Image (cartoon, rainbow, N blue to C red; front, top):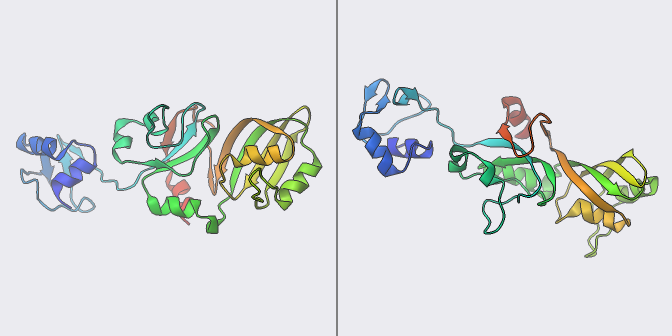
Length: 235
């Protein structure tokens, strides 16, 4: 990889700004000062440093976010703040994107990455990746609803969902539930409950495949996946 491309990819500035760093003798490769922007380097085998700080090359980033309400799951938007707007400049430099979508008023687990292959595997209908949600419901959720969800319910557009596993955590005028589905249709959880005459008043995703929301993450905050979380996710 060209030296200027490596440094630009790692957030040290544009190609022009990287050339200025080279002119300042700020860049070393294996301890030797270099000025050639076109120098080929192997970041896995060579020590590339800027102002004495080693450059750790990263191709992909994997971030877990606890998405807050009021932001949209998109890379950019003319009107609303996006989940990408919540990231620091270095993370934004990698041009990541949210894997799937959570509604604007839905909270919880959101994976953000620039790894297109992983995103495809997690979102492909053929992979049947389970997604688990916690919700509060306006209305009493019953055993009949559990049976209906297990069979699949017909949405307002005539689509019949794949079976979902509904668990009642608390039943009453305001119910609390947990729901596992393997699809990601538009507003699916809300529409499934509308199909049985009830309304979702709060929705939070708590897991996607093997990845479980870190409950210590404040709303709007994020962190890198651990090695174990990533290894389980890409299996």
